[in-house]
Length: 388
Image 1 (cartoon, helix red, strand yellow):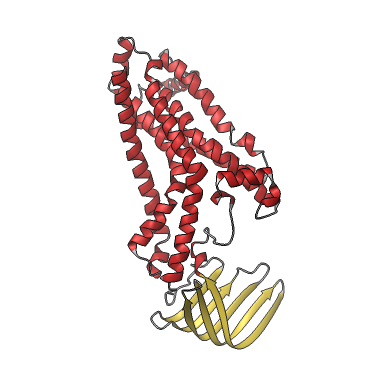
Image 2: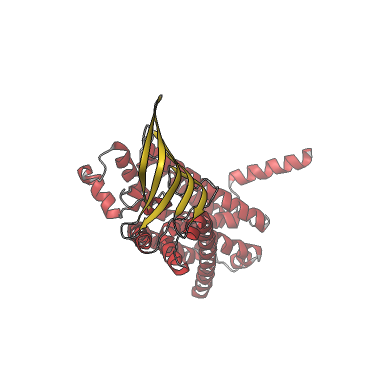
């Protein structure tokens, strides 16, 4: 049995490493494509970019580790089932219960790893990411515009210049629309402007000459003429979601979240919405890591019961069940932040539901019986074939 457990554990580790590498690579590549315009316009080196994405890795690992755990367990037992290894072990008196120590130990390790990321790694990664990005912005960044194109790199601000000289910073026929001001819209039009970078303060100033300012507030429109006018931009806002000044609940450590829940007066924002986000994030950090253990155990009966199906169908089924879990989890997070449901109930509900299915599923799989819902689906499939 030690040899069997060792072999199962090795296969689980191999599949887990491969799954995490593939999913993490796809996410990072997608993120790079999303921010390609930022990296092309800023003087940031390739290794600096890799460093930034390294600091984002804990955030992505918190999301992909549960699915990697589930897929590793599912694919391992599905292969053993397809190769009739489970049947041979059953014939030699090895029940499914005796094979559980290896996947349980694997799922527990994945759960502990995810707990470490949830409690400390996530906050460390986000803090280092913001610090490094701000340092790059202060020491290397420059602001580049494309001529004849509406540039929307800064949230709430739209730039347009008919002619652009990025070497000298000279602009011709410039149009700027600023929608970052609440309740008002400001449009600046000028025949010429100049870009002035300030790396020490991580700011960019666009200085307009001899233009007009159109300010609309409600139904009122004001028009002002000016000789010189400057618009200040913070390079830290290039990524939008990563603000240097605003402290968000998802970037805090678990200890900080617990302290705010115990004493709301120390919260950086004294609003009901922020406190709801803190409460939701607190239970999210507790329940999501447990998803590794729960989904891993849930994958065993899925692979065992559906051994008669083709592998691609079983894989699609497992992915569908995982997406159902994440949909329920995401819906609970949204409802918790909106105050529609208490996070303690909404975020624990998916785990409790899948625990019940996993327990009954393993019991039925050990008895080589199909779940009643599977028998019902098979009956419907048979009736559909007869009708067709």
